Image 1 (cartoon, rainbow, N blue to C red):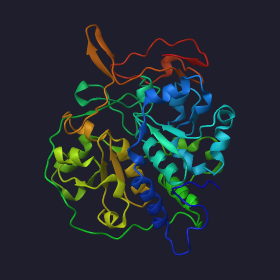
Image 2 (cartoon, rainbow, N blue to C red):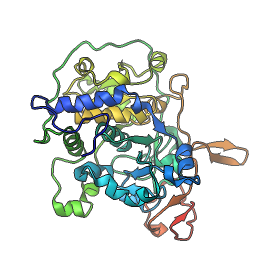
Image 3 (cartoon, rainbow, N blue to C red):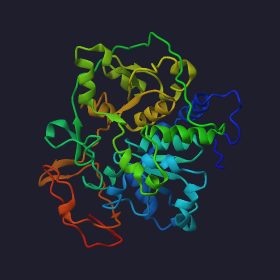
Image 4 (cartoon, one colour):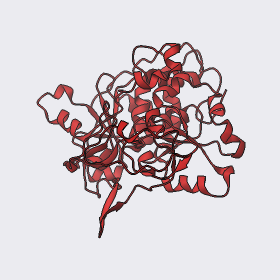
Length: 401
């Protein structure tokens, strides 16, 4: 059994509810400040391309396999986040990374998804709560290489006219960047609620309690058969789980004439940025203290919660934690950087490219080397309006787009 500093091994105690076990592990993780920490693409690239392979981290890709085969960070192990916790056992990562561990002493897990959000942030939080040392790649694969087929969802302005990725169309861009108004008044919660009831396992082991809660959240109501699991059925069956909400969809909920569908907006922005501007009605809590009992009591268990961070990275972790605690939470995709262009309110918006004298050049995309398993014929790739696929390099173990 893996023993970490954030969750103890052994019995959780006969009187401890599953909610309380998860809450304590989440509080230990969040209060330590790790949810705000990410690894930058250039720092990961420096680790894996230097002459010292003993410091190479374990790289866990949680995107779907359909994107993995087209392009991925070299030596990454692919386990879609929909499936990871359904089959995870304490020794599974030692098995997954057995080849890696022959040449490296570094067992830190670097998690990457499409944008650092959908699946990636949540996976990072859950694994840390289970005692692993995991860190999220900021902006996910989209910071590593620009390829909307291999990693759909690169951030772009909503006014660009490009098609928008949805939970049922994992192709193209996240054309979600808006410039909506913000407020500066401070909002305070005026109600308290009972905690949700969490029942996912008969085990009293903290590691298993967190795994079972993560598995329950990542799958639909219909359980997978052994045959479906063996065939990667988790990826197909659970492809459409919502983890994020776009700014336009949130604004539509807030501006219609039915207040009953208004979500509870939880801001985890740095306090100085919240004071400069936040979404109307947003209630601020420090990210390090959200899982204190006195703060969780202020969150409604029967109302959708939208978690808003500065750029969506830490927000996805908080939303994931709230979900396995029994709440109904979504992350605002790309956070406040997608809500407003005001950099005094929301600094650090992700830009694929920027204009130069000859047209456009990459800005935040690093354009690093990638690997693939096979290259499908270009004609089999879904068309993306406004984007022309690059000329493909010869099929090799490793190449650059």
